[in-house]
Image 1: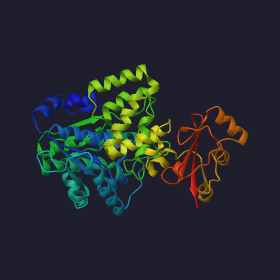
Image 2 (image 1 turned 180 degrees about the horizontal axis):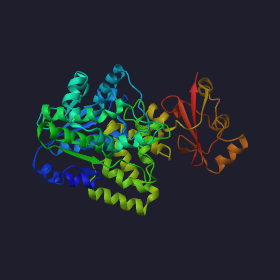
Image 3 (image 1 turned 180 degrees about the vertical axis):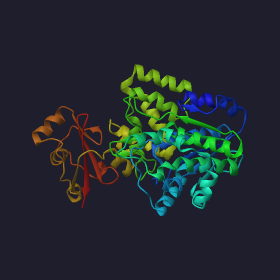
Image 4 (image 1 turned 30 degrees about the horizontal axis):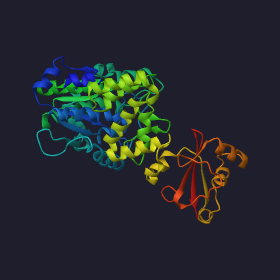
Length: 424
């Protein structure tokens, strides 16, 4: 198990050099925490979810801890400013939405490896402060807490500092581990490398409170080949919620992956085997313009998040921009594919009266500046209606030309698109 995770680039630090052998010979209960700061997971969360999925396939039992309690406090790890305090009602709504997304990746059915979804608000919010200080706080020194990177970085940035609330975060997460060890037999916590301090705090708390050994495993924080943060697009976070980031937009995000990143992303985010990834690495080196590896990455991740049918439709919409069959697209996919293209609305009654010719449409949609330019482009074979080359500028457009009953795509050359809508 650990060998596969290492090949996939998912191992950065481990608390026990013998962890690989133990994972091979024993069944572990494994936990990963996700703070419920939004109503959707984003692509950065996928690494942790896929780590649990792979461990579950190997027979280990995953626990997903949705941090309804810790989100009330906020994790300072990797942050240079205090997180905003969120309302309890907002956090509960976020927890419910995230639960639905996780069901695509983890098996919550009966069995020894049955996944569990837990909310740490259930045990953190009911624990009296005096009991917490007595049972948890006494095991930590302020010196050791200040030495943790997540705290030290904030203390050194004097203009921000760190509140007592966020300073206490690692104690709450450490108590999560103790609670899960005692109630579910959990012996392994996994997370990003920025969580190393919190994870080791939990390992220490379990050892001091119970005398038992538990373990921690982290993966490297993911950055792009140029060193920039992974998981964001120009519009912000790339979400797993189709209402925030459509399947087409998710597909495009992965399709735009840099050649220097794509092999690593294939290992991390797909179930492709070593030989398959190696073949795609060869394709990147020999035929980079074909973007075979990027298309495989986009196809596999979009299918995992939204289903195979949505992935195929997103791929079809993507191909449509490069001469594919637009008639195969649903209205939603068509609009997503041409969301960034200019659009114009023309009267439906003129179309039905046969009053809009190809030449007329080109001019009114401003695909060309004039009728003479339209005729010249038509004669040179540079005009396309719904990705089909058009030579007859005098041809009247009609209902049979429409996509999804009301749209038309005009194209000049390879890159100039205009979406024409026919309204009342």
